[in-house]
Amino acid sequence: ELSREQVRLSKRLSLVLRHRPETAGLTLDPQGWVPVADLLTALRIDRAELDAVVAHNDKSRFVTATGPDGVERIRAHQGHSRRVNVDLGLPPARPPAILFHGTPRPNVASIMREGLLPRSRQHVHLSPDVATALVVGRRRARDVAVLEVRAGAMAEAGHVFHRSGNGVWLIAAVPAAFLRER
Ligand code: HQG
Image 1 (spheres, rainbow, N blue to C red):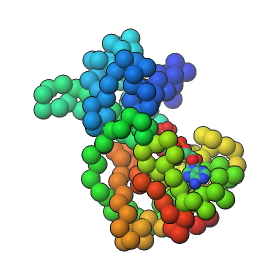
Image 2: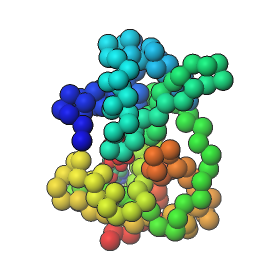
Image 3: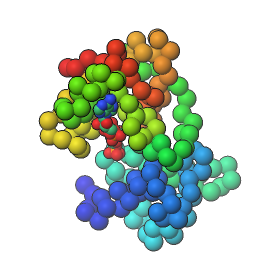
């Protein structure tokens, strides 16, 4: 369990590493990475504070890696805004037959008309199981619908899936024909 302070830092990291790096005076590289040292300076936190949030994050939202240049960097696994324009460079991945998407129930009618759209993000996010989809939907509303996505059929029809380092399935959009309400 993160302390209240750590949850605040986690949200700040999400903002900076996914949506608005400029609010901390930072720029992400084309794959979304930023040097850890720069992040610590920009957010005025120490390494232990960062590590606690990265290690104990409920969804492993962030990952660190040391490049061939010896510089340690950090990025968010997924969730980037379209406006930051990063390319995570994930390889195409073969999805399971069915994936899931949790959403506030009032969205369902529109989703069944238009399909799932990425809105302000770069991708539509899909969950590997119903429990995860419910958690995602409940960020926004108490009454959540879980949609089934015929991911295997989509892949066969040529839609390209990616799987983020923390297990979220990413896709450009989901046409309504591949959706079913559970
Ligand atoms: C909805 C969290 C009406 C969509 C989670 C969703 C996830 C439509 C909302 C990640 C629609 C967008 C992403 C349509 C899509 N009509 N509503 N045609 N198409 N929507 O936050 O999937 O906690 O961008 O159902 O774990 O909720 O931040 O997407 O309700 O992986 O780490 O439009 O965010 O990660 O909302 O969540 P979002 P999401 P973190």
